Length: 116
Image (cartoon, rainbow, N blue to C red; front, side):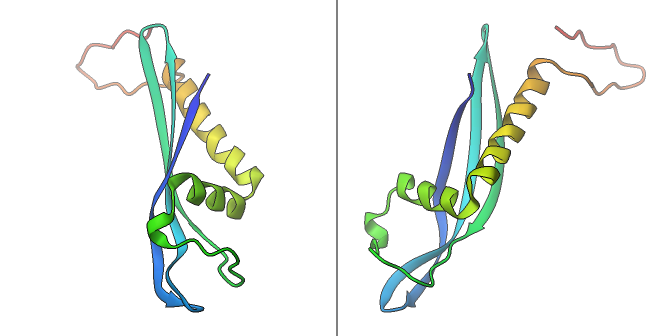
């Protein structure tokens, strides 16, 4: 089973807009998937940014009260379920290729590494 960690702690914010200070409008997200197979841990990471719609802010949360969980929820909502699933699927596919490689890099004149 792959565990996904969404880190949405780095953001861009307007100093002031709509009467509110430090308004988050863009999120720099990092998603890391991790799993263990036998004694080995495997992980893969995707990064990107997501713009948030701040046209109609209700229930404004001051920046010093924001949590990663809140910003993850905003980010995933802005992306939509399909995009969130695609990101996590890409990570799962990369991890599966690490566990079961179909391609390796070889150097002429060097020994071929064993694939377990």
